[in-house]
Image 1 (cartoon, rainbow, N blue to C red):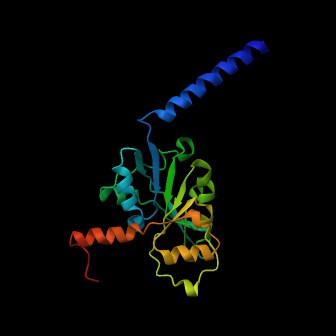
Image 2 (image 1 turned 90 degrees about the vertical axis):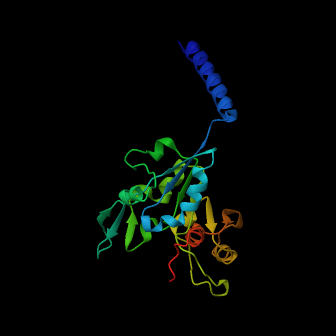
Image 3 (image 1 turned 180 degrees about the vertical axis):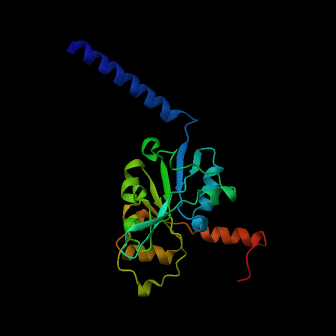
Amino acid sequence: NQKNVTKETKELKKLLDQLKEQLNVEPEVKLEVLFMPYKYSMWDSLESIWLTAKDDPRCHARVMPIPYYERDENGLLSDFHYEIEEFLVNDIPVVSYKEYDYTVIRPDIIYFHNPYDGENRVTSVSPEFYTDKLKHYTDMLVYVPYYVSGVDTSQNIRTGLFPGEKTAHKIISSSKQLTDSYIKLGVESDKILTLGSPKIDYMYKLSNEKKLPKN
């Protein structure tokens, strides 16, 4: 009867509240951190963050390459690409997007480096990974530019933001100049973290290993 259902519901809620409280203080609970590159050639824009997360005992870091398409002359999605093998042969442990369901796992943090969603005229990541979808399955969506900008804030060439820059909870900026440029474009300052660029970290690593090409 209704009385018994109500009683059972209250007991279930009490148990769930107790479980939530225990999980909040559980020392072994880790942050699920997901990195979503699409081209291996751009992996250096995420690598140093991944290396830090991978070695952090508080984090469970995963790399999940996502597929992308080239666009034809009419702007339609055409040739399909999925570069998971390039990550594997370069000793980057990865999970397949076919096996890791981010909509169910709901990572605590998602890092991405393609801000265009459907607005790139040349390529497009597979639409199920557009940032307007990702934002519903994480509490912290972080955009890391795949380039290093030498922007001159006195001549701000850009007139608007890309979809991923608007959607992200945080943007990693490589310099104060780039941060100032974002603010001029209307991004709130507390959304921007001026922390440098993993690409520079990668160049620094190659330089220390004496592998940086002279060019």
